[in-house]
Length: 244
Length: 390
Image (tube, rainbow over the protein chains, first blue to last red):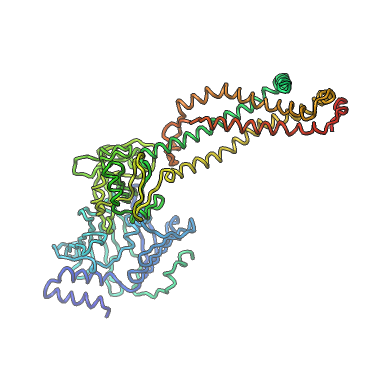
């Protein structure tokens, strides 16, 4: 039995006796999010003022440090590839046949017109090491009973100084999230619309990510296929893959 | 004197042919001066505007600052050195803090550069006093280009998001308190000017700056290795280089115009030597040296040039004076080229330009006038008298 399921199971058993602490819930959420290797096929629906675009991609992800994504459609984005290695992100554009290192203010730009920035893509998905969590309430989200967690950053160098999470009490999966600036202004939000059980793990397969400072309906992510703990050859996470 | 008289009588006697040569040469002469004046005016106008509103008497840059590399901006800040602090306290310098942020306007994301400046500074000709706004909002000063591209008016609110020095996100609304009109796009396009102290607080960069602009009357002093002085000449080098490149491109037109004029003179000279060979033979037979005959013919050509300068001055001077005074309206696209020119460009016609162009025209005319006459040196007077020519 994998480590994260031991944590989730023990928390579930604990919850029968006493309510877990915010930090324990956060660790269980982290354990649920992270897996060794995964191959995900996604659809990203970007809604504009007049029309919407659907961007399809296939991603290979190894832990939290390495990921490789290849875009398949629409034709304008087809062939675009992204490689994340630790703190660095490269993007290959077939139109220009050039590979660019995305850094500095370019990281703040939107990924293909979506509500997601390159910085958001680079973010470490783990929360427990960076935030102190407190349970501040309970709520029902998408017919699921959730804890509401208020997260405050433990150090001065965490991108979002506070967050609010709605965590499913049974599945330990984030159903809703809000990310705040230091001044308390809501910056980003996330809403899970569908959760599916994949290879013995609960996974959000349909979610809406929204930049709260932008007018619009947000960007939808739909996972069309997911392979957890997949075998991914090492050469996938090399720069030479970008120009293949 | 006789040579000049003879040459003068000959070219005036040639009638229409002479005046056609003179007309073409004078057009080339006036066009070169007129166009060069525009480029000189462009250089002077852009340099003056940049010095007034941004470059001052030079700038001290934090060692990592590179205006052409926006990636370097995040690291480009440091506390002012004691020497720079003294300059600031004596109103001889003004610190500026530069940082990147993102502005949100409806469904648009606009990458912007924030520039923090003390509202009470007197070094730069910027309406920064408007930043002394007493409201609770962060006041922002923008230029007309920024106002146009982001569709902003005075009193509008704009949400901006930034990451402080530790990488933490923050966001706030800024209030547009003033829209300035400037020819310098560097301080306008995608730029928001904020009060320095407020911006230092936003980025958690207390007492730090990216650059310090000196007033034009003060001499720079040596400071620590964290800062380096960039003199106005270095700051303006790009403008000079750009104008130089444009001048080089325009010189193709000068060459073509001058070539047309010179070919007319050359042609006239070749024809004169051929058609006036009896006259040449007579002059040599009467005892005139070949060198002197060549001199007369060359002088005739040169007189074409001199007449062209005179005629050019007659019709060109009023025209040039009028443009220098009222300027020339610039099309809108020039504003997007990054040159601080404005709506009108005022050409500058210096003595050096006029004298230089005159010398260039005269030397070229002298050369093409002389070249065809060389054949006179081996012309036999008897053959010439018979009308033969080898």
